Amino acid sequence: MDNSTDTNAQIWHSEQMVQNWVKEATAQERNRAEQRRLMADLLPFGDGEEFTFLDLGAGTGAASRAILGRHPRATAILADFSTQMMAAGEPQMVPYAGRYRTLEFDMTTGLWPAGIPAQLDAIVTSMCVHHLTDERKQGLFAEIFDHLVPGGWYFNYDPVRAPDPAVEQVWRRVSDREDPEAAQRREHRTPDQQARWENHVRYMIPLDQQLGYLRSAGFAGIDIFWKKLENVIYGGYRPA
Ligand SMILES: C[S@@+](CC[C@H](N)C(=O)[O-])C[C@H]1O[C@@H](n2cnc3c(N)ncnc32)[C@H](O)[C@@H]1O
Image (cartoon, rainbow, N blue to C red; front, side):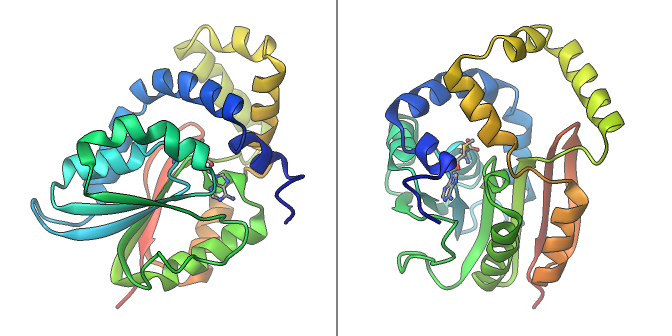
């Protein structure tokens, strides 16, 4: 894919878009604390156990921070194609200095950089798989499988598309009730917010389809570990 013309790449490589995203994410993260903690708890490592995990599409590092905080001897590799996002996360990553490194990786390519070890103890993604085409979602899941040690887990926290319009209406009604300003924001998006919204939903697909991709990649123990309306945490492990 030619990144210079791809909307997703343009958005995540724009300093302005990233700054706006970071401002909004600070508020959103307050509502995601439980899910971040759960992702960290789902990783099957004992207190004080050493392991290395990969956070793909890591952005400013929210998922990594939760895991590094929960597992004091874990080390992280944060990979993203946006150096702007990773730079924006640096101040928040300061408490974890020496326990993580960042590298550039464009998940549309399927070409994993040499800096990513061939075998990882665990891999996580959050809020980024929905930016990939179906073909790349399938490709990425197979690549993740190949990069896990036998028994290693992959977890993904992401929004999914409703399987039918009636379900979508229910999700929206409940979300609007919980966040009375959501409808107002939806109807008064700035051009920047509209572009991000269109990019956000562009390749979003139903949950069942994604679980099917995990199965095809060879994962076992596939489960939906958490779900509320459009947001889910699912995952599976590479059998021994
Ligand atoms: C909504 S942010 C989520 C960031 C972080 N994982 C989180 O949960 O806060 C989406 C992230 O996916 C990254 N991303 C989108 N498409 C990508 C691609 N093709 N390759 C690598 N990273 C990508 C963006 O740069 C951005 O950092």
